Image 1: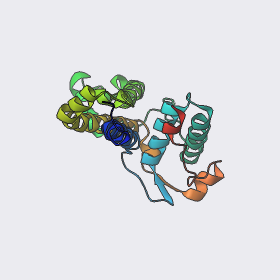
Image 2: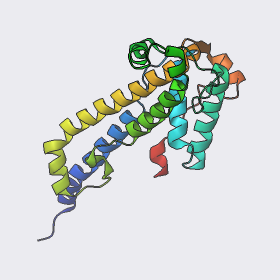
Image 3: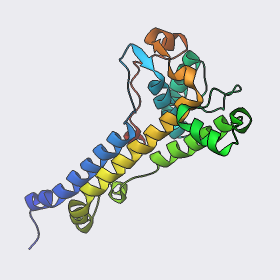
Length: 213
C-alpha cells in the first residue's frame, strides 16, 4: 500500500530538520568573531574579521566578493595597515617570544629577531586559513539519507563541539599573531564615521553566503 501524503511529510521531516541544523551550524561557525566592538566603535578585532571575510569570500560570487572586498579595504584604510602584507618596519619582539629569542640567539636579540614578523605573519595566514577549512563531516549534507541522520544524532553533537572549539582556538591564535605583528594597529579604536569616510558603511548587511550555493 502506498504511503499517504501525511506519511510522506513525516518521512521528510527528519531530512528537513537535519538540513536546517547543518545550515545553522555552518553560519554560527562562519560568523564567530574573536572579539567584536560596539556598533559605533571598532577595534583591531573588527579589522581582523573584515580581513578574514575578504580571504574567505573575495574570490566567491561577485555579490559576496564585492561586499567583503569593499569592507576590508575600508577597515584597512581606516586602521592604516594591510593585514595581508608584512610591515616594512619590524615592531618590538612580543614579550612571549623574548625568552626564546634570548635563549637561542646567543644574547643578540636584535640580529636574531630581524625577520620574526615575516615568519609570524606567514604562520598567521596558515592558521587563519586552516581554521576556516575545518568542518564536521555531517555539515556537507544538505539532504541526508536516514542512515546519515541517525549517525548525526549519535555522533554529530560532540564532533560539532570539538570542531567549533578548534576553529575558535585557531582563529584566536591567528588574531594574537597578527596583533603581535601589528601592535600599533592592535591598540587603535576607530569610529563608524572613519570607516564610512574610507568608503564603506559598516552598517551595511552582508549577503548571506547560503543564498549562493
